[in-house]
Each structure stands twice: as C-alpha cells, then as structure tokens.
Image 1 (cartoon, rainbow, N blue to C red):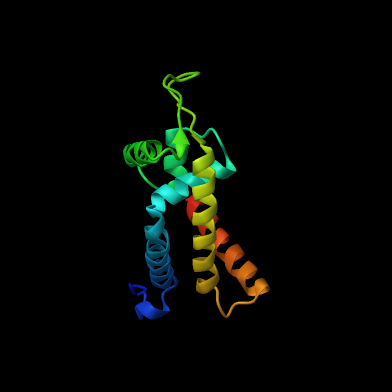
Image 2 (cartoon, rainbow, N blue to C red):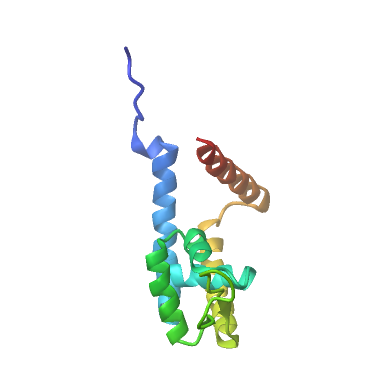
Length: 147
C-alpha cells in the first residue's frame, strides 16, 4: 500500500496558509501594540462594533479563544472603559456586551491600523485576485466544517 506524502512543506497549501496566519498575527500584534491592544481584544471590539450585544460565548467563538480567555479579555476592556456589560443578565446567564463611546473611538483607530496590515499583506494582488483568494479561503473553511 503506498502512502501519499505531503512533499516539500513550501508547496503544501496548509503549511503556507499557517505561515500566512502566523505572519498576519505578528504584523497585527505590532500594529496594535501602540494602542495597548492585543489581537483578541481587537477582535472582540471589531465583533462588538459589527454586532452589539454579543455574549461572552459568542465573542469567544468569533475571536477564536476559549470562553475563559474571553472573560479575561472582557475584564481588561471593561477596566479601560472600552466595553460595558450589565451587572445582572437580562435573560438567562448571558451578559450582552456593548462598546462605549471610547471603545468605538479605539475600534476605529485599531481598524485603520489593521486595515494597513491587510493592505500590506495583499500588496501585489489586484482587487479581483483578492476576491479569488477570499473565495478560495472561504471554500476551504466550508469544506473542513462539513466533516
């Protein structure tokens, strides 16, 4: 029985995708550090900017962290006055989180910094190539979610 091998890692889509993800994360870390934000904190602000009122569990899923880690992220953002959560859950155990005006300002500044990183990452790709890349990556995500 022959076994299929990956071959040179530089030619393996998964390996190169991981390299891109690690490079993107590093560049985002550098861009967000002067703002006093981590990538998970930025992701949380971005999610809340687009979908106010998300719960801790929803934010954790969207930011790709555990619920426990999201608790730490939210506490830090709350202490800085960037988000607010009610003291008691309006229904069930969910504490819907919202951006404060200061949080919205911080989100805007962070979004501009992250967009610069994305533009740098896609330098040399025209808009149709970027769209093809986006569609291909979305297809990869969907394919893996099916199994």
